[in-house]
Length: 458
Image 1 (tube, one colour):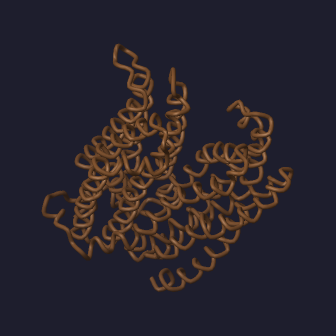
Image 2 (cartoon, one colour):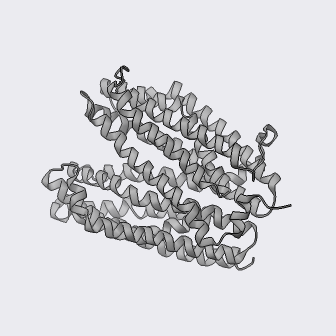
Image 3 (tube, one colour):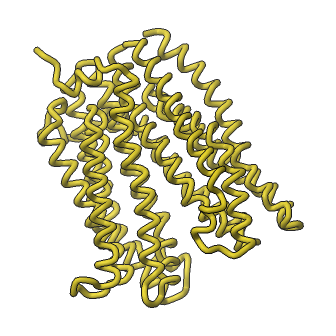
């Protein structure tokens, strides 16, 4: 029997061309995601009244939103790697059961989000603020995002399903469509344009979930219409303990890695709270760097299915090619980001209309932290490779090192210098090059061991 076109593409297309054809749509999708996150905040902050309170409300809701995304994407990542490997082994029955169990897990995740949205949101918000206006805004916003989270949960599943079978262009189209819908609806619903009522933060929430549901429905349509590599049916959704365990043996580290980003940011805000200028400077830098990091994440999401599929085929040559080109392309992205931020640090900081001291701190953050990009690129690429080679634990260790263990204690130590002398505040930014460099060294040690135990035996 002739191979399905998507399987033929995964098994026969030269790896460098395959990685570019799969990676470029994912990169565009991720960069757009970073863009409309900033636009979303800009619309809310420019409300006629209560813009600052609305931003505070969205900030309080952010950790729960990131947790929903982390669990959904992590489940998709585990399904992606396992399904790609099953298809590489020629086991379409197991691939269908992996996809079906991921769909079942999506229902479980949504049920938990729904219950929390109905019962847990007020208590969660009140644990962080006593301001009644901010509380009301945050509860309204987060309740909508949780109770209508079916879009983000299931888009994460079907996005990874399409990516696992080489159909990443379709997942990107679905992502872009949802993002565009979100951006269009934001001012309409927030400000009450086109004769609609002015909904404020509720409008931002509705724009978000409508965009997410649109992405999910498009991804589902593309999967049913074009994804002939994976069979569909209710019988495949019957939960299997072995399949679910296998999904989360790969996906759990990805969930934790995503969640650690919020933990790291919260911890740094606590460490830097002695200087509001430093908190603002780091927060703005974090938004700027997302464009480069998210591009690397998009390529990482192409590395994982390519290497995993080749590993399932037991094709050592294609596995090695996937590792080689994955690292090379990621380093190119990060090097370009480094050069761009170094050249345009001052104009980028100036866009936000910062005060003199805050602008100075933001420029120093851009120029110093960006030095870590090359090492960060290695770590991001290796995490995708580790996940593809059934080495989720190693991927998790790198995440914990580069976002918690080597960041918070080191940043705290440098912050003690800054407390006594703000002229030394720039030393805090050294934390990131140090953390990424050490983590990259550990990644290389892990890669050497994984190559010996999982690649050379093929």
